[in-house]
Image (cartoon, rainbow, N blue to C red; front, side, top):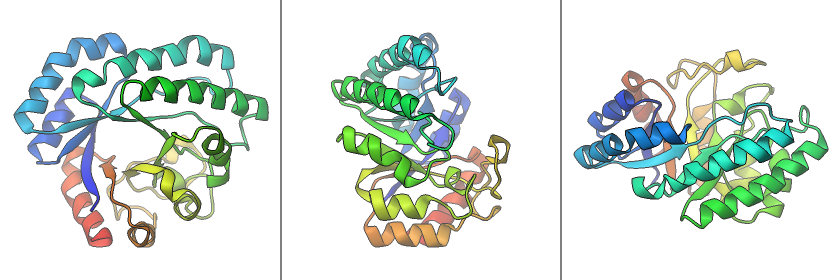
Length: 246
């Protein structure tokens, strides 16, 4: 049975997820100093609500600037990994855009090298690292999966509706199911830009959640699902998920 929790961008949203009775909050770990400053409060809330944490790591910035990524982003990620064990975090999601329509082959190769390094660093601290799909179809993930056996993915079903005629979740489920370690759910109306990533409650967009969750259910998905909607919309979104996946 899948475990359903909520995305929490702020301390206030951690409170909301905890008060909602959800078993975990996927929290933003973007800046090491900010996380260190919030550590005691995060631990207090963890105890108060009896919740667990998953990590959501920062955006990469310029996706083709390999020098900046290797000199700044990767060390930043490794520092954030070090802050996960005190919070009991064993799984984290990160963005590393590798859509071959937009990212040159040499940049994709260089980014896979960096992912190899990051996955090893995360593993050494007991963290499973999950690459989140942005606009990529499943086959753009295959070179990374082939080279990094321990890399997992976060299937963002809402993102999979963008810059495509058919939701790419079906391709990931059919061809990479064993790599799916986590799922993000939210709705949108399709579109061709980041502005179309609306993060609507389920049912307010066009994403085929009945079809996608049926496919996941048939495959036996039993890991974590984060609702990437505002806390007031989580109750209805959870009901929709359970309707489709139970």
